[in-house]
Image (cartoon, rainbow, N blue to C red):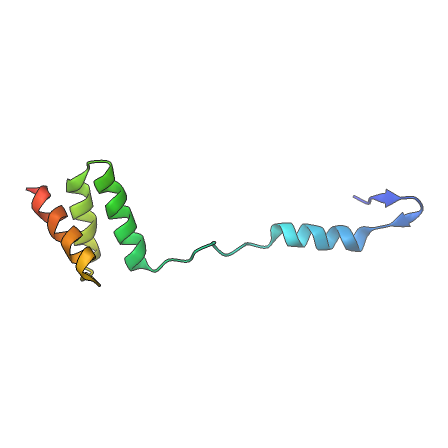
Length: 81
C-alpha cells in the first residue's frame, strides 16, 4: 500500500506512523501486586461481597502495610463468618 500526495511517495512516514501505533504502551499507573490485591478486595467490599474480599486477601497472603490496611483486612475477615 503506497500513499501518494502529489508525485512523492511517503512510504517511510507511513511505516513510522504504523510502528508508533503498533508499539505496546505501558500502563498509566503501574501497580504492585499488593496494591492490585488490596484494590480488588476494596472493590469487592464496596459491592457488599465481603466473603470474596476476605478470600482474595487470604489467597494473597500479604501482610498489611499500614494501619488502614490492617483494619480493612480485619473487618473483611470478621464479615466472612
